[in-house]
Amino acid sequence: MAERLVELARQLQDVCLARRLTVATAESCTGGLVAHAITEVSGASGYLVGGVVAYSDAVKRDVLGVPAAMLLAHGAVSAQVAVAMAEGVRARMGTSLAVAVTGVAGPLGGTDAKPVGLVYVAVASNGIPEVRRHQWPGDRSANKELSAAVALELLLAHALAVTA
Amino acid sequence: MAERLVELARQLQDVCLARRLTVATAESCTGGLVAHAITEVSGASGYLVGGVVAYSDAVKRDVLGVPAAMLLAHGAVSAQVAVAMAEGVRARMGTSLAVAVTGVAGPLGGTDAKPVGLVYVAVASNGIPEVRRHQWPGDRSANKELSAAVALELLLAHALAVTA
Image 1: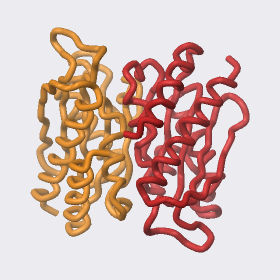
Image 2: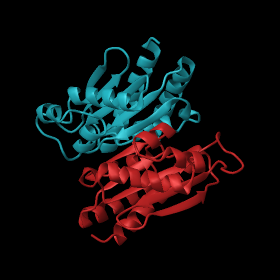
Image 3: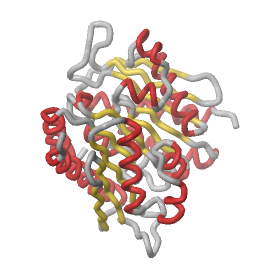
Image 4: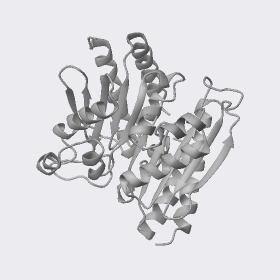
């Protein structure tokens, strides 16, 4: 476990516990790494409600409630689906905040339009959702780690900004 | 990421792809580490459908379908709940196999009856579910890693044994 992820998780935990915020995760290409980092810190059960590893489109649709038409129109790796995943898991688990990650970790699965390393990270809260697009240069493992770091950073920024 | 977990995930992927088996995960104390290990191997989308990080009892109940009465009677860290989590995520995601992990990662949360390091790992398939009880001696991070290794080993054993 990269020390940077654990340090971000520690900061997120401090802010969420102090502000009584809860968090849920919805992960495609990071495959559980965001939740793994969060749960490396003792006391995480005080704010992490749970998460979904939505590897298949069926799970994105049936468990997270991403509309089938959206998956068809934009593809699983898109800003629209990232936001829908975050909003879906937030509604499903009833949390203050939720983060979602969807992308092409590689080395397989890239296309001209959606190359290896393309990742969308979205955060949902009681305000306007935010989504970021990244194009990572690394291998599969590095792309997962870079994406997880952004997910934790975005959660932290929204945890600091959210109004009760 | 411990190389041992990735090596187990590689073996599991080979067997599952060869035998056309699909897998889902339900993780409490490992917090996503099992799914993270599985998705470190390129091609994991060929057999991993998805997973649930069921950190709160509410997620165990509402997303995985663990009966509230079972949680009350046996507690979240129990053989019964481990099996119900595995069967729940297998039914929810329609997979050949599913694994579940529930335990006390520590350093907080231990009791005389359920000390830090106590973990149950269960696998559900189309046959009789299997559940194992472990009492780990390590710290939080080590307990998560030891539990994830057992989860992958049990999945691998069942993947080799399951009849189509």
